[in-house]
Length: 285
View 1: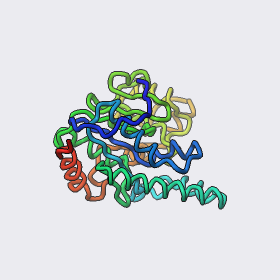
View 2: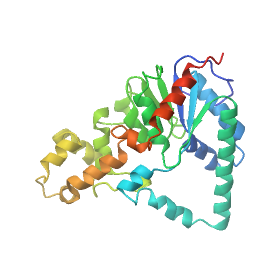
View 3: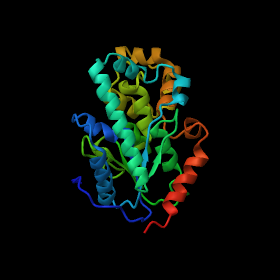
View 4: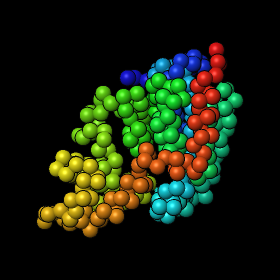
């Protein structure tokens, strides 16, 4: 689908929900070197809601992840290192960017859209909680707006993702255009390959192709764990045996968005669901 980012005005409530990975979308303008993006951000969100026939919009802020850092203190530690290496000018520009994003979130809230952010809670986990409770809160279809492929863990018949970076959609219908395995095995794929952006180690020497081969031969991550140690002289097989069940299990805990989502939102689950449920049931016509 070709998305034209133009102003379509406020969407009409209809039971479909647009979930926006707030900071992720804002980086679209940072990468362009634009520091004044408040109004264009709002227009973009409204345009996406119109394009995907979503009558409700929820924008998620990111407060970090106390949950994942309790599992692995090195989770996303590489990002702090990058920020520490910034020049004084780069640090000032980044501060201005965050200030503009904060202003944008306030504007969206003032316009009547639901904005959610909790200290120590990642936007990914708020999205996962909403997606898990889609039917209970009265939502029919969900479109997630994020360039973060981790969100593909949430894709199902009624839940899809659009990236404003690649301008591509990931849906259950076109899944095989993106991956060579069924959606069920996506977490296994992530546990094997890791996530450099989040500083989550995978198995050295295992990339997309070898991960897919292991899935085809052994099954999901738990089947692979039960099969260890694997026979084979290839270095990546030896690395996998050394990585072991503990390494794979740690990867699952760090990257799964569906297993322990209540723990990941640090006890805010009922409040989040209540806010979303009230929002989608409001008569805003």
